[in-house]
Image 1 (cartoon, one colour):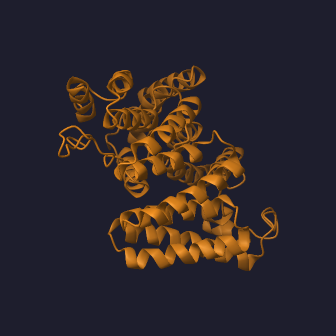
Image 2: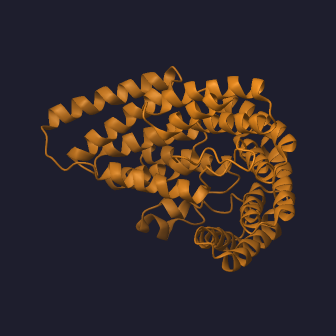
Image 3: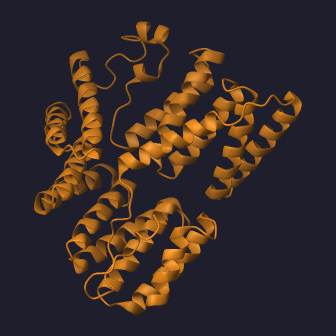
Amino acid sequence: MAGSLRQADSKGHSRTLKHFLGPLVLLVLVIVLTTGVLHAGSSEKGSKKGELDWNAYTQVGQLAVNKKDYDEAEVAFKKALVFASQQNKGSLEVAKSLDDLAKLYQVQGRYLEAEPLFRKAIELYQKRLGRGHALAKEAIKNLAILYESRGQTLDIKTVLLPKVAETAGAGSHGNEDGYTEEEREELAEATKMNDLALLYKSRRNYSDAEPLYQKALDIYERIMGTEHPNVAITLSNLAQLAKAKKNYKRSENLYLRALVIYKTAFGNEHLAVATTLTNLGILYGNQGYYAKAEPLFEQALAIREKNLGPNHPKVLKSLTNLAIIYENQDKFAEAKPVYERALRVSQRLFPSTHPVIRDIREALAEL
């Protein structure tokens, strides 16, 4: 990220918004970090010491959650996970730590990070306690809620162990979602198309990505209706692709339609609304339409602060977005306090030598 926060134009002071990671990059980062934690260390320690360490960090994390100090809770739960993993990677303690982290991320709206942790916790719970245990059921319920928050429907079969998946059908799952078996299969295919298209887009293979997104969109609209959140998700994916192809007008129209759907489905203060406002603001900002981007970034910041608290990484991104937009319009008096607040938040999130802190300091010095 070093050096990517600011980019001088011919006037020497205009800043861009290209330093923000896209969804796929974030997802890859989450998977890498999760895998690293699960495989951290292999030393055999005394079980009593390991158990005490795990309990202590878990309790610290729970107390921090109760205080809504999510940064402290995340550190404590990660340390608990490392201790448990060093003892036994398939233990109930590992499952509980994964579950704790997943719930912490879920309450902050960090769904991409929460999902793989929930899935691994569910797998371990079922292996150690059985498919019908309350802990496994509770984790599945939380994962289903996470999917609903993203406007999607969890396919229960994807989290059940093979033996369970063979018998799950008309019993507990049945037709509760209102779709036929054929429709559910089509919806599962649409999700796979979205995922494959995202991979193609990451490789800049836009010609293969676009028809997959479009097919997925057609399926969602036909089966779920044109105002379903899954439609909004796919519209946003298409908008990202259109932006990458520099088809800015199409990108804008797709984002605007997604925004209406999210507001109707979730209300005006949902994190999905904030993300779409941010994407629209970046689209406008990268074209030099700073006045159009400004109110969008202001709204996104307010939504994220309300949902995530004042010191969340996404709040930091919104602060830097807004400060850059102010600066690009020569609103230096407005930009300075926003940069200063971004600096304070970044100092809470990162070590003092982190390039984000350095870049914000440089931006302040140049005002």
